[in-house]
Length: 240
Image (cartoon, rainbow, N blue to C red; front, side):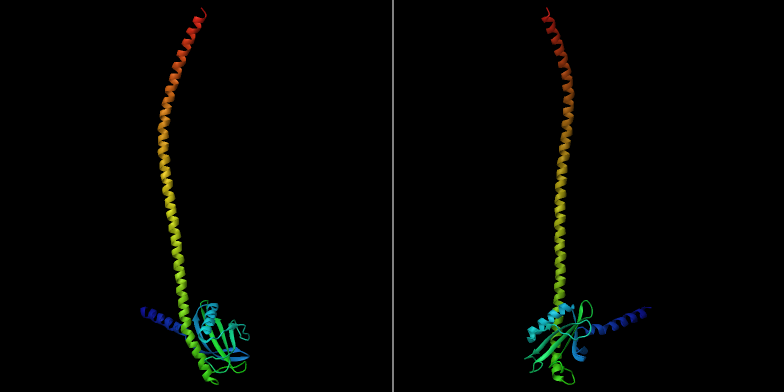
């Protein structure tokens, strides 16, 4: 049973290896454009299509002074395509070249970049007919791949840092809320204690006042009786 599980695990790992090996590995490919299949150099990178496009454009502009723009038509399938037409002074050729990049989302977090080009719409680079230019195109993507990996990891670190910062911010918020609640509870307990002491004092005062009220009633009765007797004597004297 143990050997079977071990072999099954190894088979799964070996089966997954080619997919991992493709990440950031520059290789030749084919894609349909201008009515036929064109040779390209491809690489799969981490990141969404939008993130990949933005960094690819920035990298090409900073490294080769090539400005890729949107608006490329003619590619089949759901691809985001950008192009740089009649670019002169590149490392590819002394002649002006047209360069194209097709970006395809493989998953939500991985994108395939296919780079191809030519001297015009009728002369595209290929490893057979224009080997030198195609090799320069491949060298360009070979330089892009590690930069894309670094950029992707930097973004992943930034995202993780942002999540940690958000968690810490929420932690501080919760701590402040807890401290506020504790302070409010302590203030309420202090107030309750003061009210309990005041009620105890009030109860004692009520008992004292009740006793005095009874004495006052008795005094009132005695005083009233004395008053009545004196009124009676006064009345008897007045009638003589």
